[in-house]
Length: 79
Image 1 (tube, rainbow, N blue to C red):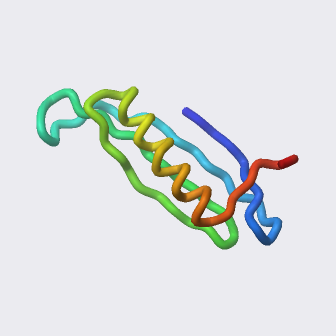
Image 2 (image 1 turned 135 degrees about the horizontal axis):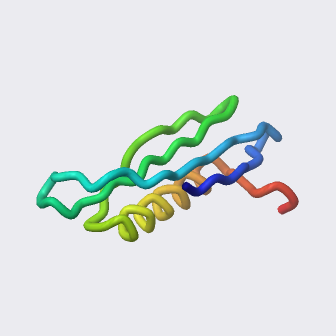
């Protein structure tokens, strides 16, 4: 599992977690899911992304996370 704490544009604290799920059968038996959850006062996202394996699922989750970071103007503490 991957965990990170962000600071929102209003100074609020936002918690992120990414966890890998089990293999799933969407287009074949090898797909894997990654669950993303961002929670805070003004932010609440929770969804799953899929990859052909766990590594790609995690990479896809990080790509989605990057878009959310920009949209919500999130920064790491000390930035």
